[in-house]
Image (tube, rainbow, N blue to C red; front, top):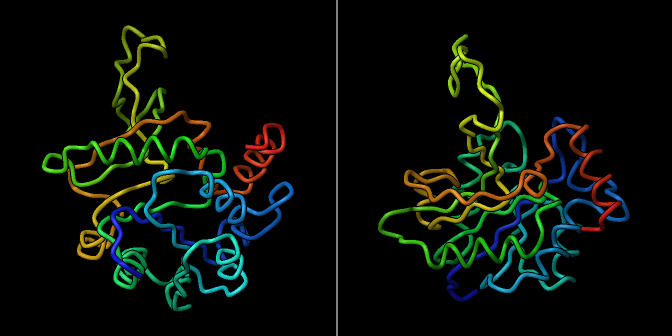
Length: 222
């Protein structure tokens, strides 16, 4: 594989802990990983798209859809291995200047949003920022160690006047491949935060997230 500029890397392992087999279980009329591949086929600005998995069925599906593949050692597909080791392993076994790490667990993140992220990254001042991270704003009342961190108790503020906090969605994180290997992370030290709507950013961590996103998918066929 020749060296490319921005590689969309889609990690798809078979098993998961909190939501059983969430990447491959039935999601509407498809599965999370197939849905994400179909979405990414509609994008315009990735130089290449690679699916990384230990599962031959997943990899064959990806090949049939025109994706390049990375056969991952099963060792790096278990919860016993730190994610830092997974980042390092995958990044060291593929080519490319930059990796856009794309999880399949953000099913409501539409193709046009990936294109917007890539275009913003291409224009990003790379001497000022070392990565682009997708985020969404949570504007709510937060406490940390029994103390309010984004509001004062008196006088009580309106929720619309609160300072929102930026939450990482991991829908797409873009950084240098060499830095991913060096840091063992898809999050850099000087990030450019790119905010997207919370609904599009929704990440499936628990079964209720899966059911919620599936209901939205069925209603809108995103």
